[in-house]
Image: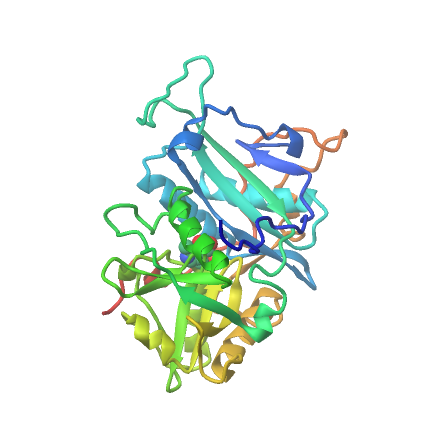
Length: 364
Ligand SMILES: Cc1ncc(COP(=O)(O)O)c(C=O)c1O
């Protein structure tokens, strides 16, 4: 029908953590199954997080764990998911999962979703009769947009799909259902030969990538769209905002027209998966010199040094798993035994200083 040489599958098999945390217990990967009639499969009723754990000189360190788990709890609250887990329990669970496994670096995927009560099945849209479950899985995930992307940058397009409008689906919540919109953006980009798509909001202002926030550099000023442009309050986005303050780079959160992308000196994406990835072209228009710009390089370097624990962060951004190990149950004799839910706090995690940008819509 049409030339179709875009890769259909992610062909790299990642290293996977053999255990999954489930409702307070560690279970084997193979035992983490759901019923095909689960509410989440039919109606998209899940909220989730993506968290990176970095390999540092002090062992694996989970990046901005509490902020991620707090966003997960906020997402659940928005969707009226009255689960029983506390912030400390979720943080402990993530630390425990990494501590019990052997991955020195990994990507953690906590998810809360509406499952199926097989004794009292409910199949309607109404989510309330369906039990809530929480899982955390982990695997080793390389560079999301490709190994070369970090230096060379990526070629992207402006998507023909708009980002969700705030009163249809709240993008402030990281829900599984939002990612149907992301998938449309991503598939269109891939099929047209681009690495990623940038969505506009419902008014035509720049919003974000299918899985990343976006920053623009113009005349030495770093600019990112405000939350009112229907974007996820990204945690790396917040890191870059705070890092710009540290590096004394002027920064603004303000609405951006699509055309501003084309005439930017530099553009880059931020995201837990994408980290800080330069953009070298948009819609086949070269951005700046077509190479990673100086300001992007400085921000990227600071970001990677912070995540590796080699540079002081503006807050307690790393949870060192080995140093927090005493708070989690060791593996049982069979190597995959279940343990009681952990309730202790992560010793070296402190209540984060959350920038206003997490909740405010920014300036226009
Ligand atoms: C749509 C979208 N925007 C932004 C981001 C970046 O934010 P964070 O890495 O904090 O999840 C992501 C990351 O998954 C995303 O999916």
